[in-house]
Image 1: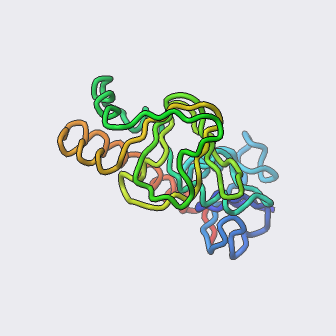
Image 2: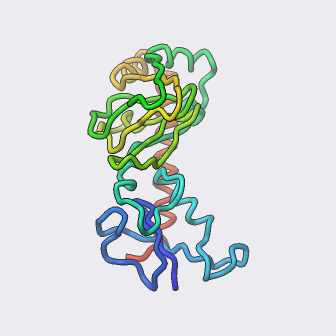
Length: 221
């Protein structure tokens, strides 16, 4: 029996071959064979944690989806996230302060809504203190953002609608940066803008390379 994982939503299944329609994202998807073929992970009876981790991290899940989990959870991973350190790599503390200065600092109490599913995605959210729970419409938490996490960074590349909601899991302080203001700031500060754009590009490139690597030899469908 082989182990398969959808590279679109992370759905994991243990079958001779994967289904035509992924139960996780309800679409014709590409699957990666995540069966363990290494002695380190116990051989074919087990999935390969190294391969599954690559897929899971690429699409933004904290763990693979398994049978019985809501397919809505797969959509929630579209709320792209990256770390503050990765987004601002190469910037000194003074540069980072300049970027953060164009944002608004807001404090949310436990249970407050930061953004809702269906909202226009025109801001990025940098968690400074506390925790934010990213939830589906069914109130299922698919990711908990902690200090240093950035939600919605892909608005720097392409506008989209929020596919999940973010709720304060505890009292939280968040820096909210408007997409248009950030673009204007980057145009006025080319060295900083170049580094931020480069970092976003690197993040996207890593995910694309991972997807391409997974599609060679191991992909079914």
